[in-house]
Length: 242
Length: 292
Image (cartoon, each protein chain N blue to C red):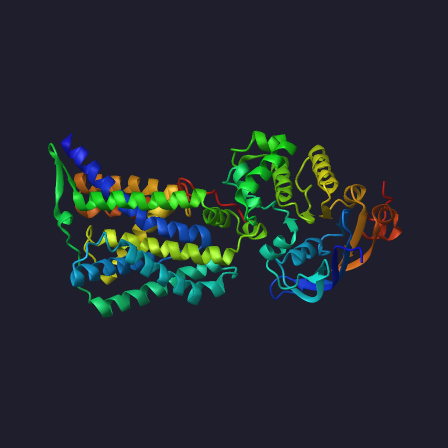
């Protein structure tokens, strides 16, 4: 069994509302970048939230290294080695960049080790070093996203889940975000990416997963998914992908 | 000139006490979005703890501070577990807490009336009626002690919030509850502990209030609007804002009391509340509310 994470036939939704995910399947292989695509309302974000414990898994199971994550709180899932960066980036606007980084390592018990680790991350991201005493809320969108992504590396997680890191950013900045993502992958972090822009997401990934109406339609190597005629019908409005 | 300095000093001395009275309210709102209308009645409960120690055992109200903090914090834990925890995920949580805490305020007021009667009380340690004279200006020692101790307690709280690990968790939860949870903060525990701290602060404020103002169970109705005006002017949830607003408004109230008339003094707080909501609803240090 080579998979790191296995989402098996999962049903989930918000509160007592209808099921948004209805039989979602996902296999995550270690060290690779996985991109989840699908139209609006397909359940992409919901899937990430179900994995990290923000939403209750009603049916099915989420297995991580063969162990079920079902019923765990987000802080418990985090301690297992899965970090989630939601669309809103999960920053603390009135804390400084450095304090935000410290919050990234909140679950670490070794606080002096944490400071050292933050220094290492700052070396990788000079902009964060430069802005360390600035309030996170006063930075640009790209800088905030950089902080949110860099912060996950503090914990040396196995998996980082990114929910639309490109949202609201200029195309040039979006490329930077994908570079950061690739840098994280090069460090051995497995990436689970949700991307609205299917073309761009798949081009920057190893594996593609297509969701629609809460179900996994199909998955495979990103190049194959990109060329698959079904996705052009479903998602790219029938036009040929680049 | 001496009049002006005198008025300023009286305003500043009360400002410290108001700051402590408002800080627990501000903390509880900031972390949990609970609009705690029962905060003032719990301050009165704290004052009765001091009164009880003073009358029965002759203990100085200042010595009763730790006792009142512990007792009120314990009440906070019980209240939180009993009333607030189960509603924490509700969409209309803040609105609901207004009604819930209103009910709690009436229940606590009734209970206090039952135990202690509705007679006006005050603890009267020697320093409460003493004053320090500097030339023509006098500083009432009771208010001076209460003001200084309030600032010390608030400083300890501020340092705790700024530097301790749990303080980081509290601030993070205040600013972005979901993000805090994702980063490993057990937000339910943070909510419980912050609520206990907030109500503990009401206990501390009660001890100091016990020799600054006379009190009786129903007195808290007068304080709700006063404390709300401090917290709203400071910016809901901002500790620094509450402190600044407390000094600002109590100094203005002191001047209004001296130069316009004592009966108009309390009006300062109500007028301020109206004006802030009209002109700058987010307060001095608050976030501008996002348009939903």
